[in-house]
Image (cartoon, rainbow, N blue to C red; front, side):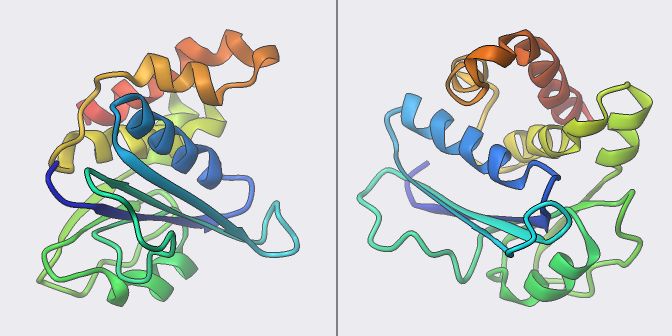
Length: 178
């Protein structure tokens, strides 16, 4: 990865938007990249809007704010509608197609429709649609890989939830393989 990758995760509070962003940031740190992680959420938290700006770069990062994402992960319709036109030309948009039936109207971006929420329900990991879609991001975004996912999870999964390391890893793998 020679340049910065500006990523915006967006959805409802409670969908793991901030967790997914923090996972990518720690993964970048472990890989000795420059990283920025900036959470943003409405006053309601669960059920309100949540988004998270993540920048992963080889060079120092000037501002943590992602206004023109290279990568948009939209976990709900309001987020897709709000940010679709902000993605840079040539960027990538990842859509949770279980919750969003609208198609991206632009033809200058790559779009991936992943039924992440349905896959999470089908595999009895209801809260991990965020990590399924993140697995797809790791596969499709240049410079990303499955390397260091375990180490990153050990940083972001709290000590009392270490039993969830395997299920998180499985969710990422599921998205990567989709």
